Image 1 (cartoon, rainbow, N blue to C red):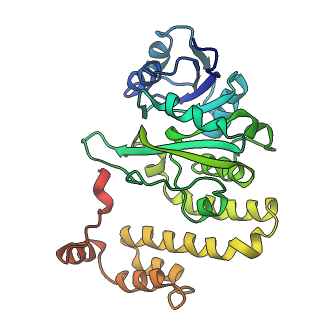
Image 2 (image 1 turned 90 degrees about the vertical axis):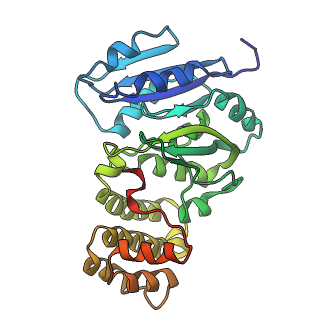
Image 3 (image 1 turned 180 degrees about the vertical axis):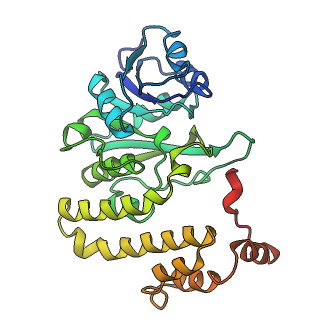
Length: 312
């Protein structure tokens, strides 16, 4: 392999992933960049995931938990086994494009860059897909504030410099079940620059069995906990960002309640902001109606909005 290729450790965490596993692993083996290893952490799977993982060569290093632990804790254990100068992540239901590592690793030539990401395609098993960024560069350089207001990173696209982890007091925070990667990447962005490859280099699979769908209520509580955490970590966070981000969290919660047919509860979250924020005001008004009716009206006037069932 070329001498100028630093080792990349690919963290794959698995819990009963047999349905999509081989496709995910094969996408790493198909990389045009050759110097990588897979740290495969089996979180006490009971299906045939182990058999599939062990069918590959020595570039895949297999580890297994005796009992299932949280995803963040499992990722932390996998990270301890990583030997690479750079760390990438691939969940076992997602897919990489063959040129992902080849195109992203060179962006680390800038010593200030600690995290590199790319454009992504979100897709489901019914063949529906979309590009959330449409090729637009969401952020380069100091992205801490922009990430706080509109998080734009997708886990399978992210590669981090190993030294970014060495600067952290903790890696994946075990108190979080759904936003553990958000929390880590926010902390990295506080001290390091980000860079982006605008090409689609990963595909993120959305399906109803994923924890992001099954446990959506947790996002609200964990987001509030993250605000309190950052208020203690980052100077001036409480005065500069806390109230603005709390508003965003409440409006997002209200939107979720509305599409869950809980308009009365949604309005309780919106009341403090309805005369201070345009989005909160309009959401308060439409919360008296079914979201299906509102979508039909907007689409009738040519405003194309994806309903919440897009990935069902």
